[in-house]
Length: 577
Image (cartoon, rainbow, N blue to C red; front, top):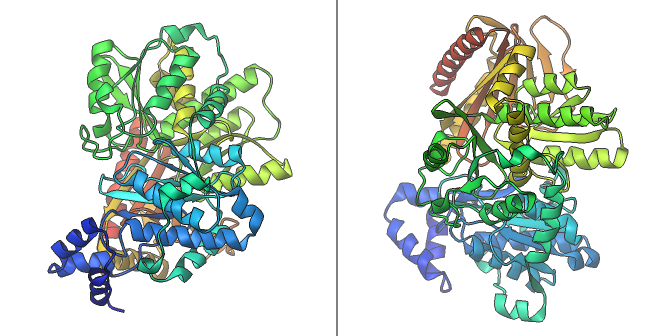
């Protein structure tokens, strides 16, 4: 069926929501917009689905959410009565339509005989991860599009261990979703009636309390005197974490924690922000303004679903934003130092990071007697490792992180957890302030001790069906015409995660990679630099990650600039082939 025919079917559907019918009528004469809305089904991938809100099979709306939930229901029913009884817990953030989509999902599960639990108000993604395990649910769903623009929403799926689905289970769910077929043919459930029958249970405060008690346990110094002297400004960026962070910091006694009140209320329009992404400086504008007024030592922001966290540190009369890699390095240094000082560092302790995350964390961990393991991009792979080693006892989880501002201190959640990170960052800042240090001076000490590890990221947007083909074409080109050097620096080896092969330029035999398949390439250069080319899993873009190291800050900066400039130009030229 062509996209025009599918659009006509939607327009002719008698029960189509009025809002969606109006949207569809408005774009019916715009072929480009109509094609983008209907040229494919919104992809339900290994982590769920994410897309723009609106009418169409390639959009987030009642019908695509209902289809995904029916497919997930069929998957759960195939696991048997016990799985259905354990049920699904659903959380949602502050985004447009998040409560409606959460209720739609719950209604679909419940009408299929599957117990559903729904939070009463917006909650963070890590709390959902925790809640799956706490309730003994079979699965979890969180309705969120993380830090994407306001017009997006999404649907992430979690397994029984509280982590996002592993690849094998995700493929099985995807198969069931695809079998559902026509999203307009999936019958709706009645939310209010299903709540009355008990098949949908509203949850809230009891789970909040259990989660907060565990978050408090990430502290190494509950009675740290310096916490009274530390001044912090926090903003949840109109997301789901505001009330949780406020309650937490009151409980643990950080008396100089202040809040950007204009951004504390959940609001999916993000009215005071040009970006709700803590990776971007724009997200800190109001926090910086307030920080200067109260002379805050650090500023902290969390993204709308409360799993990523950004940090800025006072330097003279302004604030310096830390990268995700830098915050991760500081946390590793602080947390492992505390374990060693207390004499409780396990002999099999291990730190986990992704293949696009800085190697600085690795050398810091090794200096403290811990090993490090790389996983594919996506925190679900760290969650998978936690579960694996919990069963085998081979390694003890110490810390997990990724360059994109996600950190996990303790594995009672199995996804990155901004709430845990906020408490640990605050404790580290207070601890170091008592020694006359800032987080920036600690970072500088780490660079001096281990080398200047600097990283860069280039994101190239390629929207629509043509953009997807361009991205696929670039990766094909790179495989058919391998790079030999970048910025005059020879490439020593290449890792192709699609073929699961490590190849060398000196004639050595290829080696087998043990990580799962992914359409990603990583290059290792003769001077210790590396480059990774990876399509985004959630947005229509391709990303180039670059990492360099040298004993000198100036040399590292010059090297990073040179590699970034030449590599980006090379990729631009290959896009045009």
